Image (cartoon, rainbow, N blue to C red; front, side):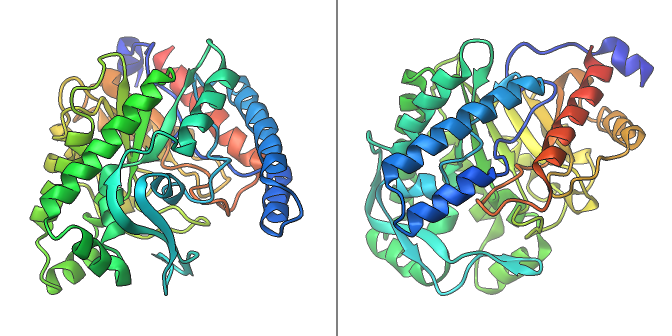
Length: 380
């Protein structure tokens, strides 16, 4: 590891050598306020005031732990993905007969489905949310915006009993891909106009496409996995084409993160060439905290201009990883990608939904401090 540390260089743009995926455990004051809002005890204005205060505290805490890119912790959201989807034109909030299946758990039953053609909404609530974050962050750190990837949106529209609704509104799937990419691109540019220079597209679809159980079920029902992967790559690529050069666009790939459980498993090899071939991404946040993610060999498909943020640290547990084992794994990764194209982060956020993972806020911050400690040992 000594030679690697000797050759390592500090980064001055996102992603940074020690980084985050974005969501944080909801503090008790926020949990209480959301419950009061849902029961009608407080107004939206009162809830927003509490959210504002907690986000300011969160930003300060992120700076304190040494992060150079900060988020609002997704404190105004219930879900990491659905709240954003509900804000697009032509999309409505629906309740399905079943939630998302996880190992040993099932989520709430919310979903997003079409009420009409998909489009950009200039009044999307996330734009105001970002404006507040940007002001709270100040000029000494990067205010990052995370949204679900266009591919994730397409996945949601094909889910369960509402699949027929999507097919009725969009009998031509190519039109759906075009409209989705256009709505996303316009939304991303709206964030840019507010000062956003780092945007992250969160995407569980590729985790599913690594999972043999999903592949078998999808194929059994007449699906073509290769064609699906190409469609998902296409909608993501078209959404981020010809964006301003100073806007860093990254993606985070996940295998499910709910209440410290997971949804899919399998290494990246089946989809690595297609996924890592999305040229307009500046970096990939990839899960590597358990053997469910496979080895580092798929990283050979990374383009020369791209960084990989390897999620060697679990956001699902409070215990800290063994430092030497982490260092050994980083060295293993350098067999396929140069040390100066590697960054470190948790494998996912700490609270992809408002329920959060099963650890304490203190453990959450200790985990991030530990990641910085490891990164400093290598890159400083």
